[in-house]
Amino acid sequence: MRVRSLLFVFMGGALALTLALGLAMGRLASESAELARAEQQARKMAQQVSGLLVLAQEYALHGEARSAQQWRSLHAQVLKALKAEQPPHESLASAELLGSIFAQLLDASEPPAGAQQDGTTHELQQRRNNLLLNQLLLNSQIFTESLQRQGLEADQKRRQLEQSTRHMAIAIPLMMLLIWAWLALLLHRRILKPLQHLNQAVAAISQGDLTQRSATRTPDEFGELSANFDAMAVDLVSELRREVAVRKQAEAQLQLAASVFSHALEGIMITDPDGSIIDVNETFCLITGYSRAEVLGQNPRLLGSGRHDRAFFVEFWNTLLSQGMWTGELWNRRKNGELYAQMQTISAVHDEQGQVKQYVTLFSDVTAIKEYESQLENIAYHDALTGLPNRLLLNDRLQHAMLQSRRRKDMLALVYLDLDGFKAVNDRYGHAVGDTLLIGIAKNIKQVLREGDTLARLGGDEFIVLLVDLASRDDCQALLARLLTAAALPIDCPGAGKKLQISASLGVAYYPQATELDAAQLLQQADEAMYEAKHGGKNRFRISGLGELD
Ligand SMILES: Nc1nc2c(ncn2[C@@H]2O[C@H](COP(=O)(O)OP(=O)(O)OP(=O)(O)O)[C@@H](O)[C@H]2O)c(=O)[nH]1
Image 1 (cartoon, helix red, strand yellow):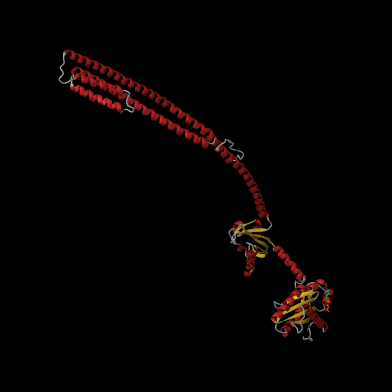
Image 2 (cartoon, protein in one colour):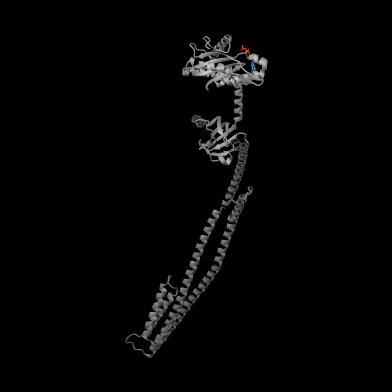
């Protein structure tokens, strides 16, 4: 049975019992009071009847009208009291009989007016009066005894009622005790005990014993509560296990990420959307020279080299904001002031709402690679002996200069320079002396050139001079003479044990010309002019398309 039903039964039973007991007690009290009143009434009437008897005797002895009057008055009171009873008192008839006898006694005591009483009549009347008086006494006695008997009966009944009341006074607490005992037992078995089990299970689970269950299976509310609690515990445990597994996996991933972050060969820098540095790894510190504490909260501008203009960063941010990432090379400055090149990829990390949460930058120090590339480039584009630009670089610069010349509408001169009698130096003093001479002559020629001009070595004893920004052909006439002079300056050649001096022949071609031509054709023209200078006797220059000018 459900606890609620049991409580309803208890409440109903207790209410009904209380009502019944209350009614019974009320009835007992009422009956007891009624019996007490009846007893008192009977006693009072008995006294009044005794009074009637005394008054009747007085009247019989003295014949006083006052006694008769008192008798009537007292008798009227008795009658009134008996008639007032509902139902009328059983002694009413006895009282009325008394009244009738007393009336006869009065009639007998008063002889008719004018009647002569003789001795016999008087004696007869006296005997009649005595007879009536005896009847009156006898009936009064009977009446009194009846009233006394009634009083006794009422008293007996009242005593029985009092006895019943005493019994009830004992029975009621006993019954209440039984009811409370039953309620206490009910509370203990159906409420407290299941609650205790539930409480123990909750305490055990909260202390980590996830196997603990309530296990109360009574067919009531606590049975349902216990079953629901156990089901909830099973669900919670499985959910907890799943959460733990997910958390362990997340922790493993975090550890892996932390390990990658710490041990990555790339520098890693994480900034918030405003650009403040949130975290950096060890490689960042190794590359930049800054400690982690020095850069946290700082802006990456701290590393700025000043080598990139505003346009560079505008493009950088446009790309990063539109595409979410930027990859490229960047020059930065280490803490010690040294410039370094970094190849970096910066990626925006977004939150679930698509807002940028962080920027993560991965970068490598590519300074060494850049230097190596620069060296390779230098080797590829420069002459190893003199350090001058080689044919490749010359071609590049020549094409660029021709383009500029067309744009600016000025002129350039391409001078093909070949040393005279250099083979003889090699042959006489050796290759090393020849090298020294080549280096020395290159240096002297360079010194007469302007900053924008180029001196290149094509190979052997052949050089090219590119003269730019010429207003006219006449602009470089003096310079051509100075070139001849510079090439013919004596060079100190320790290998030869003396200064050596040779000359050079120059062939010149100008650009632009009436007919458009390319770099190779221009070079061809200068080469041909140089050969003309050689054939003309060396140590001179020839201008393509013109005769000897020196
Ligand atoms: N020392 C040295 N000699 C070189 C180098 N490259 C080429 N040569 C030599 O330079 C010489 C150039 O020869 P030519 O220009 O034909 O001889 P030349 O004596 O100058 O002849 P002309 O130009 O007619 O005056 C050759 O003997 C090459 O072996 C080099 O790097 N170092």
